Image 1 (cartoon, rainbow, N blue to C red):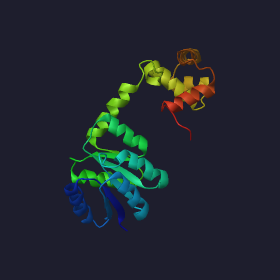
Image 2 (image 1 turned 120 degrees about the vertical axis):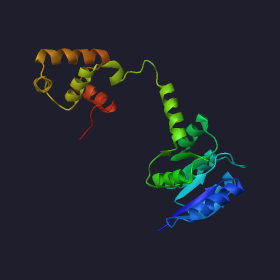
Image 3 (image 1 turned 90 degrees about the vertical axis):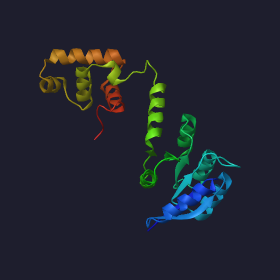
Image 4 (image 1 turned 60 degrees about the horizontal axis):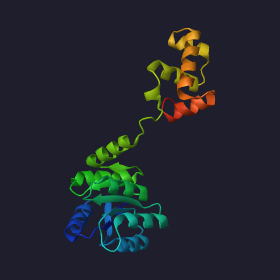
Length: 216
């Protein structure tokens, strides 16, 4: 079975080239071409594609708004942004609109087919340049005073916190770490003071949130 693809881009040379390349694959079938955002919405409703390759800068209606409207009606469609823009604002707004991937137009065809395969597995795909931008943006947005296990606790304190969250008693922790019970109690008090958390339930939630442990 071939996955059905709708192309949405107002550059005819690009869209015709993509059509030819994609149709050479037995697992992919281009079922339609849209040259503006409004037409993309109409064709998505009519053709019910598995995936839409969506440009951002198109006449009548931009690709980000078209993405938002398509997914409001057909949330199972996967939308992969194919854009010349590497500006973080375009990337952020595309992902907020529901796109599950973002790839630059100057990417190699092999990367495009990898992106298509990834989003069809219901996973997120970002081209390498875009991943770098998203990561830098994420780091820039982290408050300097945000409490995290790695910023607030020592390595030994993180060990103790993980074991506490996993339901180990003070004696069990002391045996595992080969320290005294008094040392474990001291670490626990330091952890609670640093995090301003008092109950085991609160400590457990924090440990799970920080990725130190997980629920079985």
